[in-house]
Image 1 (tube, rainbow, N blue to C red):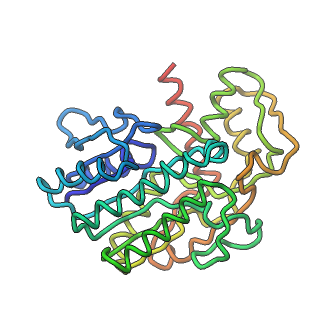
Image 2 (cartoon, rainbow, N blue to C red):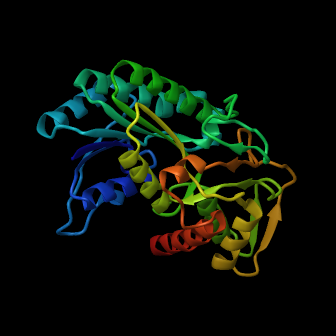
Length: 323
């Protein structure tokens, strides 16, 4: 197959790219390298390499030109849209960031697919579309109302709506995957990386936003990629909407801080704030329902805490190699 991966040089996209190449597929990666890195998709000698184009996926004309040129040489079977602004506080401070990097990339991708006659789209969405329903209600794919509390969540939800409309018009199949917090390497952002860098800057002292009771689902990036490919291979409906995550109540920020301190600076003091959330737009506690994915046959191997502990060691090693 020939695949286009928008945002394919990022944290999750680069892992997905590697999986396709290892399976013998062709891949075009389109990325603006805002958080992605060209080296994330570099491959050892003898390994299949993706084609790469540095481009702004929110520019509809430029995106269509890049996709059309590749499609003319390698007829494209499927588009994976993994690009977005992943910095929620940045989107709260400036709503145009999420409008451009999260929503307009979706609009541009769909317009290009319509004009080129491409029929299959997989989209990276988020638990942020649900909003804050509290810690006791398991968030299912049909949970509502959907009332996001961040611009990031709002633009992901708007993107889902646009994809649904496209499925009524010209897409044959659309997969929408709602992610929990995803951890692992190559880490470009996130709580674990933040904690490790804070401890490197001030050994023996780790300051945490919020009181540490925030509790969320965490999934290792390797399992996320496995789940997306598993679902896309087995559910071929017109609109395929799935939560992907662990089957547990999640992991507390205090537990993450403790795991990072133990790995990076044993004996460090962890200093918590007083608020029940880390920032405006942060959903402090939620519980994911992954019953739909389980019914299809996919289950994660790691709990939230196991995924975090594995990622802490991986990211610590990443940062040690970089220093």
